[in-house]
Length: 234
Image 1 (cartoon, rainbow, N blue to C red):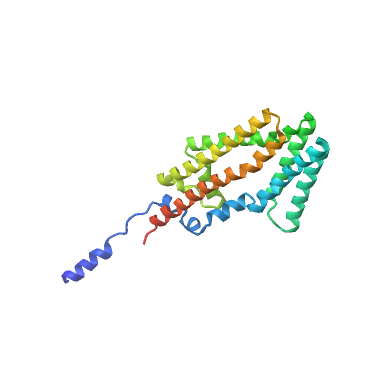
Image 2: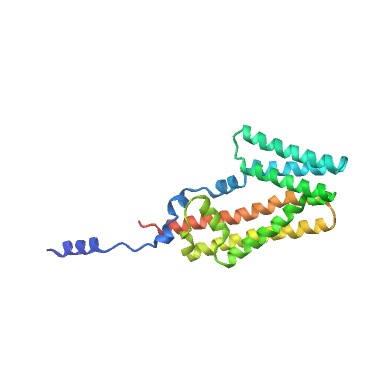
């Protein structure tokens, strides 16, 4: 056997570098996913965010020119109309149903207490709850930004074995926690000041904060793309 043939035999027998199965478990779907589109779809899309703001605006406007009860009825009717509209157009119903449920609970609380500000009470404390849940998930190394994203796409949770991915999703999760905490503090302050009009402004303006948290999650998902693509064998 010649030296050249010997070298060829040795090179072909050399095993390829080992690749961590956990680190590459999410390669197919992460590499093909479109983070901004997919996450926005889970939030109901841009139209879903707009639809969720309409009943709030209607409630404040009617309450300012009429009284509490007509305002509550108007908000519920509008939320129900939006749900029917999305059903007719065959759009995702989950955001509309969630919005209708939230409006109904808020209307019930406001009606029972006779205070317009209680229309926003459920959303205020829901933000507080989410701030705690996201924060705790980051502390226990199960950052919800990653858990939710890979759960939506059916990737499994193998990404947790990659330190860099876990760190990226932890930062995104902390960003969501801070966003919810800021929304809670701002709206609770307006609630204590009994400012339902400004509460509506804060509720709608909170979508800008959601956008920032969304960008953080998009960054984490793109980081996941880079890491998993680099781990693929060539």
